[in-house]
Length: 84
Image (cartoon, rainbow, N blue to C red; front, side, top):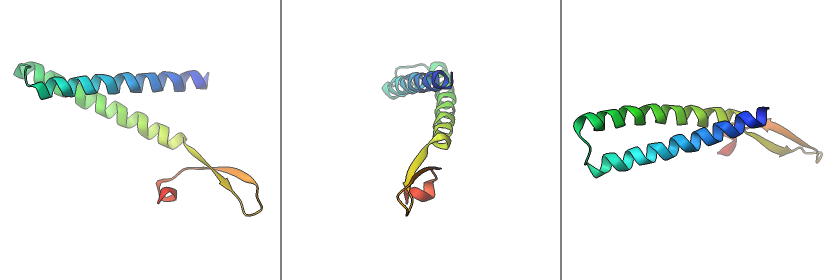
């Protein structure tokens, strides 16, 4: 069932990102009324926060495969320090 939750989260993330991109396009066109623009902006902020939280959650689940000096493999949690 955990795989299903992950798939749902990915689908929700992509749907939110698509909606956010549409909101940005609508705002950039400048054809919305002030009230519509404010509503779109507020929705965009909410979607941005949701996407950031989903990315943070995914980052916490990422693991890296590390080869030890004796040739064995193990997984370790990925940290941004490891990427540098």
